Image (cartoon, protein in one colour):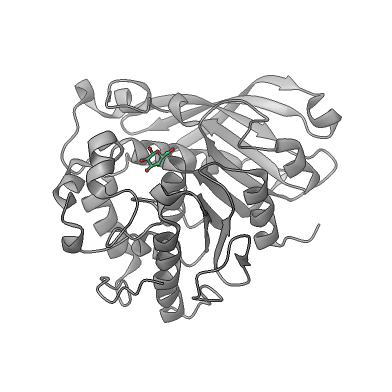
Length: 341
Ligand code: GTR
């Protein structure tokens, strides 16, 4: 197991300063929050999940100082229950159910889901003229510290959280955010910026998500900047081949999720996401949780495949297999939450 004694520590740093550094240097400034979010139900499938939970397609309209933006979300809530916990799932597709979202099973465990497709917010490329980007950036032009696409998807997840506040079936104190890979990075940033969440779940988020960037044996900042420069702010480019000069590392993103819970899931064969560095991040962020009087992760020993570290405010598991969001991951998430039905 690697040791990292050269990590900048967030201990003693105000949360607002942790967030300022992360946004200035990595993700960029997020558009200002909407002053109103309203939902219009466009269609209902009353027979969804054998009639146990209607599936609603809802168009959210967000009004902000910079203008108006609308996008679809998909809402499923168990009919027979009240005050249900909820997952806001930032997904790659708009299908419900989906290979990354076993919706009926989540219903059977008593969960509502609110899902949106990230590309309904803005395309996953360097075009900043479409969707939300087209509204907030005039002529598609960004300043060096304006956000990239991860910041825009994060903005949308928080808008869905705003909408969730209006849903009477949902227990507002038990709403979590989930995402896989680039959307795991997005889920962690969402949890960091929005204290209303109960927990942020990062599935295989890797480089510039959960994984420590220093001494990473998978994807490096230079790789991610070569392939996906538009996920981040322009400032992040200065850390290509210069990880040691980062004034932070990715455990700051986990630390910024305090005081609520945060969870990191890795997959054994997902070397690109670097499971070991994802775990190191949990261990390092745990010291920060402890410093503010909260339990962090319950063990700092890198677990064997299939084992979960649950019970604290930081959870972790590494399952067998490769890079995807599986039913097994969801079941571990549900166990970690441990909400008695
Ligand atoms: C990879 C990228 C990773 C991860 C992944 C994904 O190609 O290098 O950082 O985000 O894509 O989102 O599927």
